[in-house]
Image 1 (cartoon, helix red, strand yellow):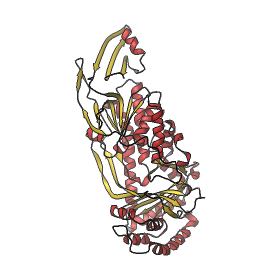
Image 2 (cartoon, rainbow, N blue to C red):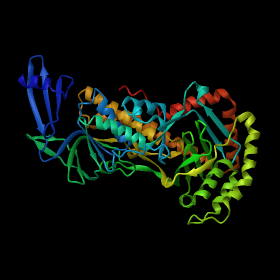
Image 3 (cartoon, rainbow, N blue to C red):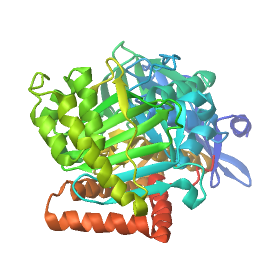
Image 4 (cartoon, rainbow, N blue to C red):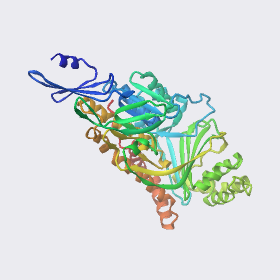
Length: 521
């Protein structure tokens, strides 16, 4: 009875049926079960793991990017899970502060949906982001370079203040890092540490077999044991490799060219996101605030390398042409770029004559489409141009015994819909809820049966989003005349019939929220 009373006072005690479960956080991992009846305690069984380890944690998250950090924050700030011992391993410098200079912008940004914004607010990170660095946009124009199709969305039509927010990734990361720092009693951060290896070795204690728990070896020799190992370590996940979970998909034979751009007009509120589909891939201009926008252009790798190597003047002329000129102009300019980035013609002179024709064509449609051209771009931030390969990947399963995958470790999506990070946040929310439920019901949160609710909730929505975005890209990349006509008709009908626009707006908002429920934190 004395042992039962000692366990009942433990902060790590949960109840499961008629048993009490204690997760001992002192010394080697130890699971103590006390079976109780109305006559009191009738037995005590203890299984202790070897004492040759350096650290023991309930949850070890490999990857301290935005998705992994958000899960750590959700667990540490929730009253249901804040007693868990959490390790967060990050190879980079999670504590590096982004520049506060308003004229210095990162070239990696994300579109944050209302669901993701609520999640960040619930874990205490949203308010930690400088308001000047989270810019809402309320309008979106999507049009086809190879047909007359054009659609405009305005959040006011659906009674909403905004469609989403554009936020620089490093500012999201800094906000999450501040929450992690504030909850250092729950989260142990292994900053700038790389995972050297992950293994699983069965052990025995007191004559009873103990489950084989993942053992993480860091590059400095530190060893961690995890009741639950979470892979948030990107597309080349070591956690996924350790769990022998296959990832299937394909490469797009495209690169995403990104850059930070300055606009001609600094007085405009800059609340419109622009996306134009071309046969080579979509190009998007995402508003960062008055006078600044972020470029994301999906294009073939060889063209991407040539575009990145262009001198600033030619680069600006090409990007402006990509948004303002007929498709033939863009194709001609691209053909004049040599492998080293040098050009064989005067881009400004060649692009100018097609620009007026493009505006006239758009003006002819403006009476019923309200179509406009994006703002002129006047400069590109130094060293902001970069490219990264695009691919689609989805793991055949998201969980295994004592392993869960979230974010890019579980799936990788084309950036044209801006949903990669939002899907990752949805994964983190779902896994948090699954862990919380496991703690409340006294389950071993690392066992696969306790993790299955997360996989069941996220697998189908994630896969559906991946395939939907893939199909959209292939539809707009098809140059067949029949397909072009169908695109023009579909976009035109969508933009003309107001009830359809409102319905599609709500549908797109639902899709952007990635089928997530309220976090329930």
